[in-house]
Amino acid sequence: MAISVPLHQPTYSFFSNPQEQWKWCAKPSYSFSNNSQNNIRPIKASVETPPFPLFQNPKLEETPADGLEPADPDFYKIGYVRSMRAYGVEFKEGPDGFGVFASKDIEPRRRARCGGSVLTVQLVMQIPLELMLTIRQKLPWMFFPDIVPLGHPIFDIINSTDPETDWDLRLACLLLYAFDQDDNFWQLYGDFLPNADECTSLLLATEEDLMELQDPNLASTMREQQKRAREFWEKNWHSGVPLKIKRLAHDPERFIWAVSIAQSRCINMQVRIGALVQDANMLIPYADMLNHSFQPNCFFHWRFKDRMLEVMVNAGQHVRRGEEMTVNYMHGQMNDMLMQRYGFSSPVFSGDARIHLDSFLSVFNISGLPEEYYHNSKISSDEESFIDGAVIAAARTLPTWSDGDVPLVPSIERKAVKELQEECRQMLAEFPTTSKQDQKMLGIDCTGNYSSIRLPRHWTFIKIGYCFNHDDLEFAGSETVLLHS
Ligand SMILES: C[S@@+](CC[C@H](N)C(=O)[O-])C[C@H]1O[C@@H](n2cnc3c(N)ncnc32)[C@H](O)[C@@H]1O
Image (cartoon, rainbow, N blue to C red):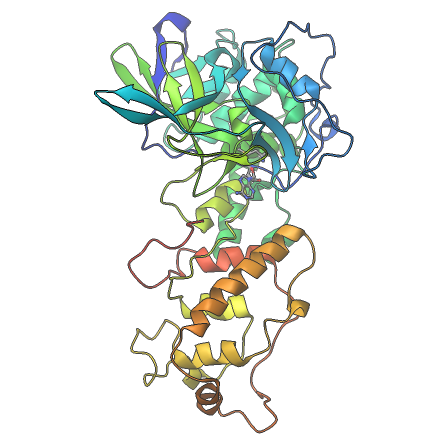
């Protein structure tokens, strides 16, 4: 049987791996109200308030000019009192849930070096190891902080997990355990995590939600993941377990929620223990509030001497006051992975791309186009699965651009659709046929009607973002075009 070794401070250090992919998740919006759904206790207002010279939380405005809701002062307080530091950033609730925003302009800085000067990165946050929940990815399990007493039955549950695949189940167990510990930081921080209704993770999706995705593969992957988490709970939270286990997750929903938090907020880093380098899964408060961008302005750095995670602004980067600070969750990965893991996809689409036929049709909601229009070799010599002139002609000639087809709310969907339309419009404009040629090619009658083309009434952001970037709907061409924003 696997042994559990609590991790002791003096032997433990990390360093960050620049190649590492950051993995986590967020919700579209949520408030800072008590999280009764998840039984997370309300924040205690009794935390002492020392002076905070480094991290002054911004004054709450009655009506914020940017329309974003500032974080509750307690959110800052619980971190300050335990040495979390932040400089020139504030936390606000925006369209992608909680996010981190610049509270002042950040200008690139230079440092003199060898007769010249170099651009330096700038520090915006420091989160000490003591605030994080970490567990090693491989046996023997090591935790930090060392909150689980040896012999506690949660060890047996963690030991029953598969070292190769179950990192999220282990982290979920640790998180639930931390929530149960009086005066544990996570008990307080948990109040600011998205509850089951707010979290965008598809692990929490209903069957109806999964059908809405219109992606049978993704839906079936998520069903399997839901089943896996549920079966784990059933196996380990059966009626005979001691109360100290039972109370961590009274129902499977609570456990699945914890797994979704682990999946969508975990950061993987390499851990150095003496001469040994191991991977660890970490929940890092405050840093986990950074949203994703494929053109991020920040990155993570492990300062192993002081055992803290630092959030740095990219060298040479200007960040204007009010601008969002972001990191890249998944280097080189695609929208389908973002959807699977974090429950969102990037709305951004690169206009240089040639698009797979199915993606194209689905974005334009064109269906029923006669087969012969798809592959018109007179216009395009590309492989048959990619759009050719006839399809482009159809899209260009069809009235799919009207505002009536664009969802009004939420505004992010509308913005995404507009951006996508604009990109497509530019691409279509470059196609070398005239409108007349298009019409001829499509055999349009004198009234301009297409008998065989049907236009559904509306699209959704998920369909668009997702269709464009799904694994099996690759873009043609050599560029990595899928998700560059
Ligand atoms: C690590 S959390 C980031 C903090 C999160 N916004 C929150 O409210 O707690 C990751 C989650 O944030 C949201 N998110 C992050 N980046 C996003 C983006 N670029 N677009 C949409 N949602 C995003 C998704 O819901 C994702 O699951």
